[in-house]
Amino acid sequence: MERLACVKSANFIQWEINMRAYRSNLSRCVQVLTCACFITLSPLSRADSDKDPWERFNRPIFSFNDTLDTYALKPLAQGYQFVTPRVAQDGIHNFFNNLGEVKNLANNVLQAKFHSAGVDTSRLLLNSTLGLAGLIDVATPMGLQRNDEDFGQTLGYWGVSSGPYVVLPLLGPSTLRDAPAIFPDIYANPVRYIGDVPTRNSLYAVGMIDGRAQYIKSEKLITGDKYNFIRSVYLQHREFKISDGHVKDDF
Image (cartoon, helix red, strand yellow):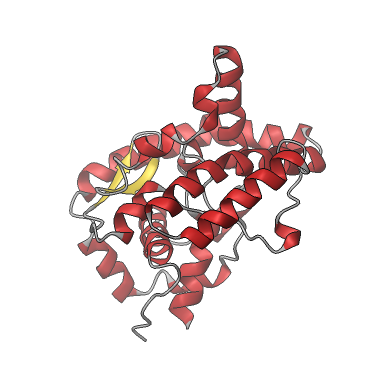
């Protein structure tokens, strides 16, 4: 049960200190405190190392991402939180979550999860209309819980193994399976189809800053070697997501 709680909690820091916010709608608001202790256990560290044969290449990229985040993206996110009222931050976050329902819907259909696809459709319609273009999440109080699906999960659902862990420039933690899966999800982002370039780029920028702002408070939970911590959280998180929460407890 301890491992299951840890894996669930990793959703809160999926992207963590890297640039995961560049990908749409990374996971939302889960407790991570138990993970901070459990993830540093030596058996788990060895298991993650076995999945990271490219560590000597990954670490320099991780350092580059972390430096860029420290001096660019994080200050922007902190400034955004400082000047933006909380109610406005919530509305912006809901807006981008609503855009992400298109990606969730597409991947649930590809995974033949038609009930979940129906929930995605209902959420998109309700929040886009009654929720004023997604600024207000009216679907969740109605019992329509948000899914979080991507094409990497779709490949994993149909049996494609994750392959080695890899850190992508700017985009952060990934695997050999999940890295190319970014591109189909890009085409499921409605922002891509906005014809006005300044508007499109502005939405990309605001979405990136909003995504990064979600994880500022979680930074203090990182313990030990940051690279190892984030790798372990990411790999557990992906295992949890692809198995829909049905993770075998080895303890």
